[in-house]
Length: 94
Image (cartoon, rainbow, N blue to C red):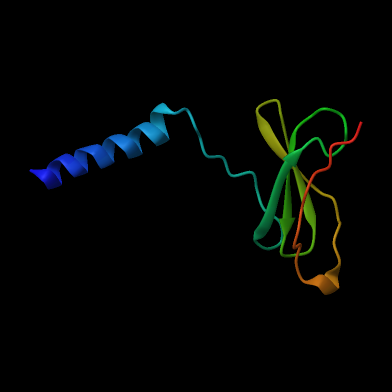
């Protein structure tokens, strides 16, 4: 009986956190290799929040949401000798 109650509670927690909470998962895209850093902010200082991903191909990618779709822009930052992007942050600037 304890196992049944545990399974019911586990199902309720998993079900409510994934379905009822309203969160959805969307694949924004990728770069040449795997992403190893992610930051969110108004990187262009225009008030629009975007997602930035530092990739193992040494590039930084910008993902913007508009009109129901995500678009990816390669910002071409990074050094090839570094081998990957180690730290990524978006600075707020007035």
